[in-house]
Length: 283
Image (cartoon, rainbow, N blue to C red):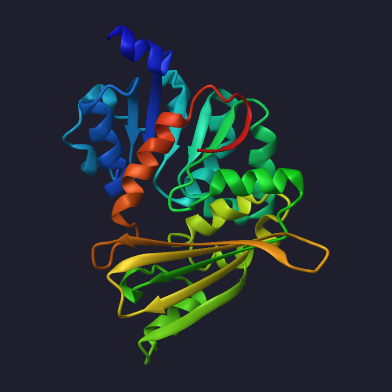
């Protein structure tokens, strides 16, 4: 490796990839084809047949044996059940990036992982959540008063549970507001679609999952994912509030849960997930 690469990354990081769907495959290819200071220590997938093109020494057949690979960072891009079952175990041995942060909407799991992060770093990719660092700063200063995230997607891009699934199934209009309320209650109903909202709740630490508001809209006219973020800060003596509003339009394939730009954003988060120590870190 060149001196430039050494100075850029400081040290190489061995990573484990848990999940080998579209994002997992993208991460694997990027790490194998580019020198980001990262090496693939293992790949695990529930269906091992998806791993047929990998070298045998890269495949981890039993996730309970993850510690044998001496990894520095484990990246979850599979399902929230992985974080529920293994999150605290991963953090006892190495850094952990939770690719499905909606898992943290479960209060008990949230507390468990935050406690386990006293040993190693729990990294949360900001993904499509624009302005995460600024919101974190406002939250730590106590100046963040309200935060709302509105997500608009084509119905075919929504993978929903319970009553929301029924609402989309019976949708008779071009647009339909499916939910507007606390993010904590929305996450179990749309665990694959509202990771951006979960990131917002984590960044807005003084508000959390119960006070950050989420709005989910199905729109048949869309060929993209639209994310609107509304921030409210302190007010002056006249009652006028500091506000910021951003609108992010992310092109997507028809029926895709993840927008095109999210892949590159996730990779950047992985590259930044180093040298922050124990604790919870947005990256």
